[in-house]
Length: 356
Image (cartoon, rainbow, N blue to C red):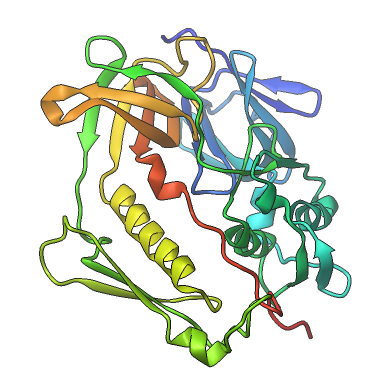
């Protein structure tokens, strides 16, 4: 499908006519990003776009990015002027900028409250899309670590609640878990143009060994000392890795044996997922219900000749692109959803860093 309308909204102006487009959204990156390019004759009037301007990118009326222009790139030769506008969601500022809040600590505050306090100066909304009640439990104490960014602080806190943190097309910060909404089945002859299957052992290990940590202090409700917790040792194996490749993880906090086992199992599942990514190029930017492809949704991959018989996979990343020579493409990076179901970590008695 080539009759798509790509519009860049800046203030009260709409910029169209883009000939080179890339839009990427991923559950492994906090902010979505875009690159829009066009080529004009050198004598044509230049577009009045500047870095730092608030903007919104829409495709056929559906918002895909709400944020800012980060970079303007202009290349001029004797005949033509090529213009490229690049930017990210509003949440890009959370990746770049330091976390600051009053005394630098919270007491009896939920993750959502901490996020709202940190995002408020940036004008960024917070969406809590987590059903698990435990994830909404308040932290007894949460402290900023000197120099960390907003994203680093919130990602650290999110691990203690077993949730993911990313953004939506409106530029809000979103707390969520691995998606359960199923979109459609992908098959050759219906909606697949090509498929790339990658298998790698580079990030996979034969043994995942988790050790308790005595450096983090005790845990709330512990009946053992930090030194005793350090002696907790759990080993989970990956039977698919046939040679000796051990990995040792020292826990950020003291852990019971069951918690260490859950952590080791998650490290194994995460490594398996990232060691078996599948990239599928589909025929359109839109799903069958005319919505743009978005990450954190499920699809069923049915390519029996390649070993995928109606296998359910999670969309980890989507990349929409348009080029003068290649037309429109949509690439979906797929992995098993189990690799994104991280167990929550218990909080320590002094969760977070020191504040100077």
